[in-house]
Length: 168
Image 1: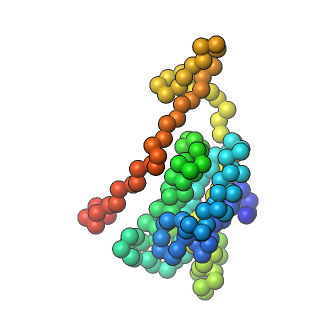
Image 2 (image 1 turned 90 degrees about the vertical axis):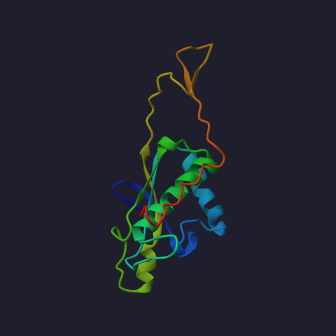
Image 3 (image 1 turned 135 degrees about the vertical axis):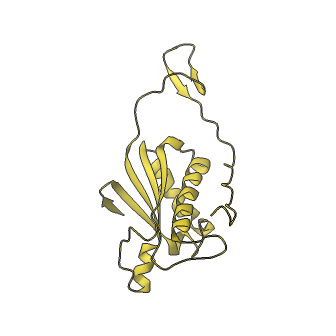
């Protein structure tokens, strides 16, 4: 954990949370991620998930480059926070930075490994303003000015369709 200009940063290193070249979180890492998620769920902070890579070019059947990999890992964790832990989507955002925000040099394997990560950035409190009653918001009969947001998520969220090679 570190404190950055945007807030508290919890770095999830690739070696523990993802297989090399994969955007799917390892099953063995779900319990560690669960502890982070439950701590965040108790507080009304906004959270940005950031994907990062080292500067070694990647090209495999799933990812054409480091941008592709970094921008695939972040929404994978956002989706997990929404579906498994009930996070409100408006609290979350995802970003991919490829190799352009390193925390170490890329001069040796150990340094490159530190750059391959997903950061959970705790940004600040969510808005305390109540939404005006509208579609998807129920009003209490006892107190017509009180509003409760009703959020129904499909279980599981639909997968993001793969881009065909011609669409890339």
